[in-house]
Amino acid sequence: MALTAQQMIEYLSSLDPETEIRSVHQPNWPLEARITGLAQNNPDEPVYLLAYGDGGYPPEFEQVEDTY
Image (cartoon, rainbow, N blue to C red):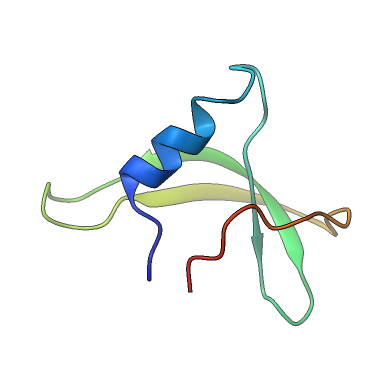
């Protein structure tokens, strides 16, 4: 199951508005990237998070919601 806009809005609305958003990718060797924007070609297509990769490794964290 993919994360929906509604799920993301509900979670993010509970955070401090100044909280930085990052992406963690490559599950077997996690790397993190700063989210720098959003992109969508058409209203009926997914929204993409645009990221700038720092190449760093994220600190250990607890996953808030499993969307698989």
